[in-house]
Length: 168
Image 1 (cartoon, rainbow, N blue to C red):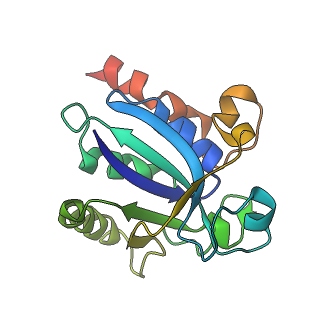
Image 2 (tube, rainbow, N blue to C red):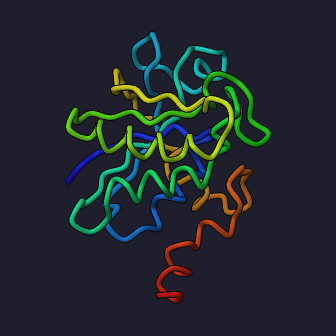
C-alpha cells in the first residue's frame, strides 16, 4: 500500500470522489500542514493555516499515482487561490502532499504536464506532508451520510469509475 494526500477544497467531495476507484483501499479526511497540533474544525475554519485534506491509501499495482493525480486535477480549479467552488479561505487551498520521497519525480512530472494547460502559474501546493490530523467523525464519508450536502465537485464525477468501465 502507498499513501498520498490531496487538498482539493472541501474534503467531503474529494473523499467521495477518490472512494470510487478500484485500487483505492481507504480514505480519511483531516487537516494537513498547519502550524498547530490537533486542530478541530472550528479552529480550521478560523484560519488556523491547515488545509482540508484527504489521505488516500492505494494499491499501486491496481491504480497508479499518475492516474490518481490525473483524477485529482479533474476535481479542482488549479488557478484558484485559497478557494474551490463557493468555499473560500486558507483551509480550502489545493495541494498534493507526499510522504514518500520516491514519489516526487512522478508528482512533479504530472504537475508540469497539467501546468502546460495554463498561461499562469497554478496555485496547487506541491510539498512533503508535514502533519495530518484526522477530522471529526461526522466529517468522515460526509456525503454518503448526507447525500444532499454541498460539494464543488460535479456529481457526475462521483460515477467516473463506472463510466470508464462501461466505455472500455
